[in-house]
Length: 342
Image (cartoon, rainbow, N blue to C red; front, side, top):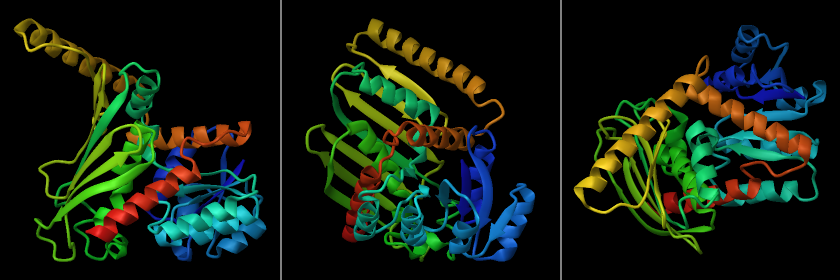
């Protein structure tokens, strides 16, 4: 299938890198409003055509898939035009920042055979794929809740750059990254979530950031709660997910791509020793799997490749993608509500 990319920023390079090893997809065109940018990237990545006008790319190229990699405020009109032309769509996270815009997308998809997905990239990582398998298999019992810590430092490239486009979004840098912990919680709980409580603070040094600390509690209709903590003042980047079940707990380190299962235990010294040995064993096995799994590919490249392979399968087999449009719209709704309440 021929694929065209819209938006030739830094994230486009990551997509192009991953797409090189996806069988069944050929990147044939790039589009960016800056002709020098699209021409340079076309030359560097050996893509045959480049455009400054999106409609022209759709007219001239026989595309099956469009990847929308622009800032989020431009996602919906680009996606809607592709849907009208019968072209499948991949959209970079976040889908959009406004629920009413997300609903326009759902309307455009009604009666259409077009497949659309959003790059909720953490769900396609090696460790989250394994965690999802354990959760869905019932291995950890009923899911009681999930905690997600998403921490960045004050050197964060987006937060520290006053002119970055993220600061123009509702919620600024917080609003840009909040979809990550939200969709992770959605995936774990497999439930419709509502916003229970929010606390936001300003502790950092950047005057252009209204808030740089956030704590939010989300409630599921049937499957427990989600606790989300976000900071841009931490000592080191952290993306940790704790899943609490009636039989087991999971400790997921997204940055190091490690997964530890914690089973039943008492407070005895013997159980403490067994528990430490078990955790050490899980960490060692994760290290070995990562060393093998990431040979020749970064973690982002690995996850993006899995996302595209999964989406291609959904197109070929006529099944729902891992991240459906409705799921992505729910992420937008929750993100928007949090941003409006801080």
